[in-house]
Image (spheres, one colour):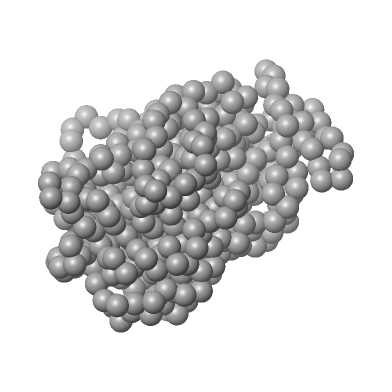
Length: 557
């Protein structure tokens, strides 16, 4: 018999997300990390809107919003001349903006959130080996006091970075390549008068119009505090290259001394649009970018997520966000499996859904990194209009239309028809319930580890036989999901409040502001099923109990 349901290896943002979500879904887990304490460095700082939505669902977003600062846009200078400002402005229906938050703060918030479930990170605990067996995994752990522990877990999730031992034990390949350029990064304060909340990108071009020098400065919480990244001068010695290291010296590595403040000042002297002084260097490092990805996200009882599964150029701050959403995608599926409620397809869907996402991120960031004159925004057009580019950067366009868990579509849906199965479920405001004197958001209803069924009633289905049919759908779906499903009857704004007796199940919510109708384009009598990770699982019109139950059996045994 296993000692624990799931062992999570690595306590960075990805591992902490996996452990916290497993605990929220009622799974017994342990999380270990070889470091004695978290690294106090900014490292990855970009937080995209979709990650804030994930933290909303987890119950963490308020703390993050208190600690983060908005990333409003980017100022661009080429050979000292200003170019059009790029604004990171999303449509008003998107609830959260782009933000920046030092990785050390992200880890602190996630660690405290995990502790709320009674689980602490086991530090100074190193994974030495793994042996996967048909019914369990044996992990050998070395503790700081010299004790060697043999732990038996039902599953292991490797969030242990680019050098992942879990990945190696699972026999997964990690193919890719490295770029020859090396970069230096620093956490500094800069005394310029550029607009607050905006990053700054300055480049110089050679006689052929190709970039030969660059600096990117991204705002962080604090007074004039920036994350500064620039090309390492070719004459700067960095020691021998180690081809076995996927990204050169690890980001944040303290092996040897990092660049000094004078080196960052020299870069600003060359490229800053105004005379400025850098001060208070909190941390610096040198790194080389690579792009690599595993062939599979799973081998039996072993899984990988985050940098253990994929690494790419840090353009647009996609890495941490992609890894957090790996963990968020996997946790609810592992939980159903641990509880004995999942079909065989559920765990296989982790690779099917997340592998294409990482592939798209790698392709996009590599294409941008190889461009002679990269797009100033860091987005890269790829033929898309500006709003589509921005939504992709925000990770709002991540979708799983080909997932084995998602309802197949026989016809292509247009954007005007609302989110299709596999798409992200958007938020909407102005929902009124019978017992709340204030409007609610749809995300308030989705803040649950269960599936959520939304049944839309306009005229025909607001009362009588139509309403009874929707109630039957809710009851049958609840049975098919083994009780792990919440259902709501959403009525159009025009439907009178007394059209249906108060207190019947499912509870009623009125679309008083019409935002649900605008966002989802529901038809009278339609059912929309949303997964625990906030993606549309299926849309059913007309809603029929048998079809809902059949679809849920894709996920629930």
